[in-house]
Length: 163
Picture 1 (cartoon, rainbow, N blue to C red):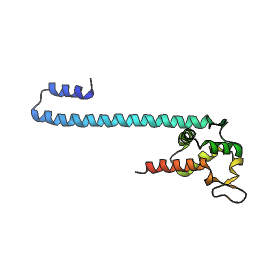
Picture 2: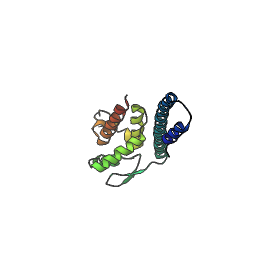
Picture 3: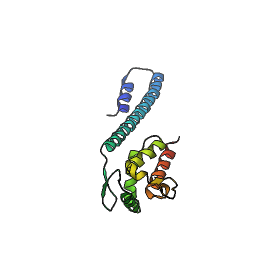
Picture 4: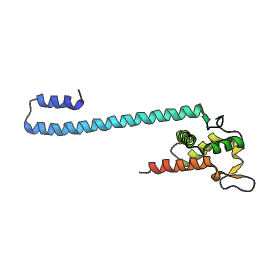
């Protein structure tokens, strides 16, 4: 039996005037709406808690990621591994799995998210071979597929969060 039907039964069986019953129905509808909103909020909260737990669990136990060529554990420790990842991202299913993994690593700030994801993907030694735009002795980070995936995902994620 639903809350609405219980409240309706109680209102219908209580001795009252027609006017107070009308007010009771309005209160019943408001109460029902509030209960629905609370239920929705609790469900949303529960989902957010589960996502946070998964995110922290993922940070403590980094997954192995199969990008079609071999199994690698992050952070990647060589430019060849990074190049293999970049090549693997040409395949749609690999790119989708990579974006899902990257999304789980992000937090509420785009700058710290980018830093964290990049530090998760590669060791400082490998990262030291890159610069955003590149110079003669370093590779351009913005030309790498993995960087483009992360950047576009961050853009979409934070664009959708703006009220």
